[in-house]
Amino acid sequence: MNRLTSIFKLLSDETRLRMLVLLYQEELCVCQLSGILDAPQPRVSQNLAKFRDLDLVTDVRSEKYVYYSLKRDNKTLMRILDDITSEMDSQPRLLLDRRGLADKEIYLAQCGDKCGI
Image (cartoon, rainbow, N blue to C red; front, side):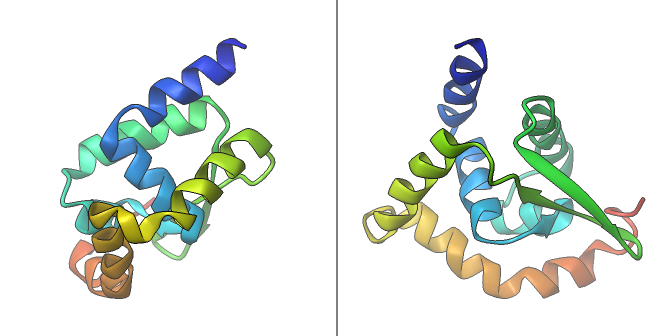
């Protein structure tokens, strides 16, 4: 129950919820998340650390970047994110974030070595 409570606390923060929805859609690095969310990279990294502590994300190192993706084994979280994304048309902020995914390569190019290993 404690882990579930911690997950709901994470979801209560808009930025963290937006991050989880983005990671639900595809894997991204810190600078891509930062660009899409228009959030400082340290804040994004801190939130990713919280996700990692709860074993919600995994990271894969590719060349000079670290990509994060959502672990799909938490069925409760997956159902919640399924519901959220199915209602995305009524969530303007989440729609903008999804459009921001189209610019993910631009954010990666602007990143340089900031997301590096």
